[in-house]
Length: 572
Image 1: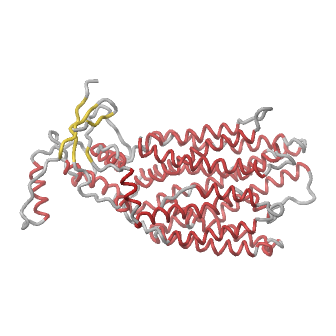
Image 2 (image 1 turned 90 degrees about the vertical axis):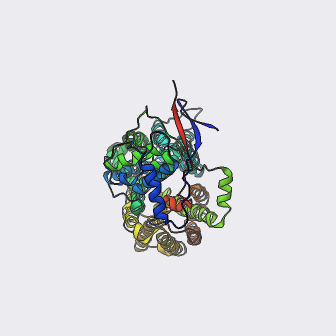
Image 3 (image 1 turned 135 degrees about the vertical axis):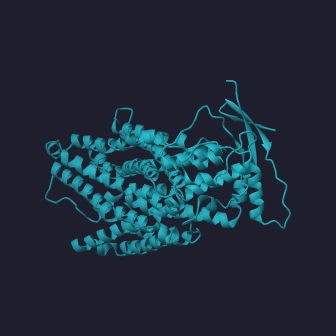
């Protein structure tokens, strides 16, 4: 027998589950269950006091010899209690704690869209960043995000969601603050320093994606999981809007100082981008305490730590009181349950029914991110290319700089309010009615049509003032259907982040082919192609609406626990 350990303080010995002789076949299943519980009733005693209505349905643990059958029933009853729970204050708390993280992520990612123009005025040759410099500060974060998703996703499965939740936020806070304090010297170029800090920040943001998604989904009831996860993800839109709003406030606040600046130096623009970027750590700092104090998800406690009793107690506590408590001196009772291995991974995805889901979800997110980040990180370039809000030709010097920065911030706010934010909440209203797959299909279809129109009619849509207004309307519609479509559903039906890197590298390298911003129309046509492929990848996924996480896992839940361990407190 192989001993199990509990943090070096307790040891446990795995023993087989006691079995009850099978009843003759004439007995119905209900009679056999009745006899089984009758035999257990004389030895079970209450192991905790609870106000939960579901507690009566959960078998009590035996104080002497634990029983795998009772623990298995207790596990399934606890899962059912989570899945059937009514909306409560605890769900609001989870939504807010996870949502603030997404707010911070979006602010920090998309603030560079405005800050890159400011950086160009101060540190760029000819008061503009070079193609490679602009690409570097914008692509560093998506690269870090990809690394962070893989790293923190793995760590969350190994050491737990709670232990890692907050660590990624610390990375974001430190890296954001580091950007705001970056300097330049003879041996160090400030753009290079910013690239390093933004990569580190991206690792933290990448960690937030899987952790927030897993925590919000594992705490959510089945009937509202879609809306709760959408509400968490919708904070991304508010983060983008806030970045533009803060940019507008900062530019307006420094208007007088900027007007008196030397046009060749623009010292106060240096203040602007530092404030714009640095303020991104404030919401993260506020949320940090709540992230560090959120309970471990019961599913991890039961299925990875194998502590069913603690998980059932946590479920009862956070659904009734909104809090949780872990007794550090309690004897931990481990159970024996299937443990995934690499062989299981290969066997699982060797089946087409499972592999198609992986391909469908990951490629759908990849295709969406090509357009979402290709546009989102370059809104300022698109707005400049179509002449939306361009400074008056008569303006010169610092007046022209001020007008340009102000117009860029206003344009980004318009895009957020008119397209991004309404799209998230349209999904929120319909995600648990229509389902995930229909919304994603509709979104990809509409995006294909919109990008075809914007790309192939680009010249005519940018020829006159009224035509540019029409283009701006279509551009807002693309942002709306990105969020009332695959940008939200690919978060709920998880995928990946490689598309953001490909999008930014491709956009940065191709946008100026044939002249400044001359290739924008062809990029829109390329986006249309990827949206079309997203339609076909969506056909590979299955609908997950109103299904529990255990149903989606395709694992048999009855008899999941097939052994128990007798815990022994060490003499430490």
